[in-house]
Image (cartoon, rainbow, N blue to C red; front, side):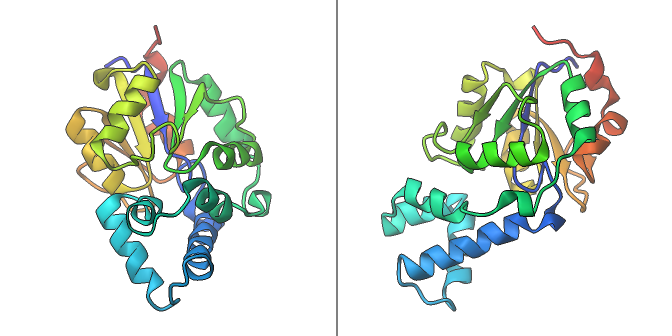
Length: 215
């Protein structure tokens, strides 16, 4: 198989979960829902879980049920000192730049947050573009529309696209659509095409990528 396009999730995929950044973002979500919406701290975890399972993201659930301003929410929850959590990763940068395919960030977060994360990791020049929640018109992964929209924006097709994500629930619909799926997680899942404990393990897991030439 010749792959021409690679779609990379951002948070907990380009960097390990152990950094604590994604947990800090979750805490900012709780704070937003408590301070801006007046919800009790006790009720918020169950409500976030319900929104996540029902709508794909907390934001989408808040948009549909609480009429929040999406840009206000995104700015608030991502208002964190990213460089306190992340360090440059020159090995990952070298590996990404060596890949012959077109590479895109594909995230349910927004572009400003993605740019801060890429800068902190030293990966600013490793991707052709960022497909964020705004570009997805707030229809997030794992909704099938999000994947079709990403493929359209990347000018890619299903058969020659590989997608990387740390969340099995985001990869399951991608595989159903025909994309090649790569789970980046400490816990393997047999139903996906490839499994990586860390993204830096890609050359060992899928060496054939370096024989795939873009258009």
